[in-house]
Image 1 (spheres, helix red, strand yellow):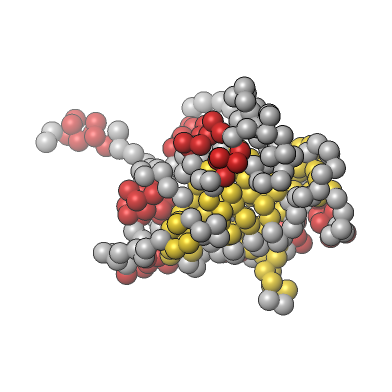
Image 2 (cartoon, rainbow, N blue to C red):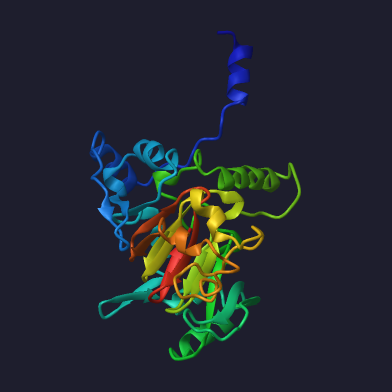
Length: 319
């Protein structure tokens, strides 16, 4: 091979991927050839895979879940590289809860964060949820003084914490099962961000990596993820209840004109009590999967699956 050909190949070579943490390399090596366990029942009785990411090679996960477009729950010790994130949760007795003082200490009290202010889950107040940008200190003050009996809750969500703190790729990296070659949204942004940092293009840095801090009773209405892509969400502490709907029932989640998506697909909700507007919700629930996600577990939501998420206890999660 002549030097010109070698130079051309080198110029077109992809950037080297970040080296996996020592714990991830040990787990991958130890479990090479390991078969993952069979499916276990979720709360609804519908079968869903619940397994340890250490007992499942990334390529097994890719072909068994991402390619098949099936949900799964992964558990096991969090990666070594997540140490900074794990220090943002603390234990009080037997409970693991968000450490709001540690979060303010890391991010800074003046950092602006997105907060949804709306009705507590199950409260039919007619209150519209409003997105506000506020200083982290204001959210922290509400968190510390909140009354569990209040009909209104604040939910810090969709916070680009790593991007805003200049810690992209440092604060946390996904486990190998959600690596860049399969994460096309963040993979695209990482390449664009690198170009902008080198001065090759203009524009602000961005990503699709988010932090969520929600109290018991906060929730996210029915939706699918951006561009109908897949997503993953890891609970650092707390408990979430997920309601998932496979893509084939999507038309049943809309009103009779096919224009407006239901906000809450649960039985007895305001949408469910209006069958003339949402006639398909009862039928859609026949295919619904309910999953309770606890601390340390990662929920994988496949492409095009609609879902709504309810914080059963105070939660700190990343995705």
